[in-house]
Image (cartoon, rainbow, N blue to C red):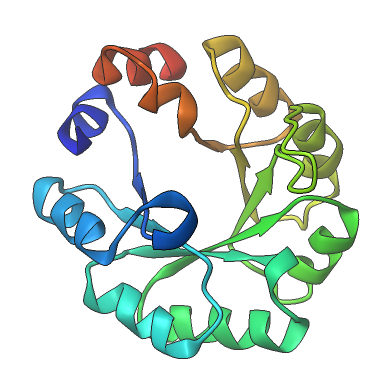
Length: 185
């Protein structure tokens, strides 16, 4: 499956490693790392420095830090450790308050999650609202609620330069074709 993402033109593959809620594992990430030449993003709830080191050790090129799950000190510390071990760090926000907290560490990558974590409802309006408020120079990644080329173009118009797509591709009959369709290639 990971090769289909690569063949479709994806620039990165995201792998859920969280076991309790998402049934992922570190071995899932290692298998993807072995299958593709693309950068691999570890999606998990990271709280400790050892998880950042583990991420690098199992083959991750990038980690996700969820601002809502971390206090400011932990966010800054884990971000720095990620950078120190040579990984990219995608800092995920859901609202203006989290965006301001993220901006304080001047991340290169800011993920705007279009899913409301309290209701699980999704809306591209989240990216449309937050992207223009993001710090200059940060690359914006729109996350969740992207099902079509039109959705991808809509978040691009708002300022997103990349998209993170999960469910739409996981449900696709032909992943390679679905990636190409989202990218317009």
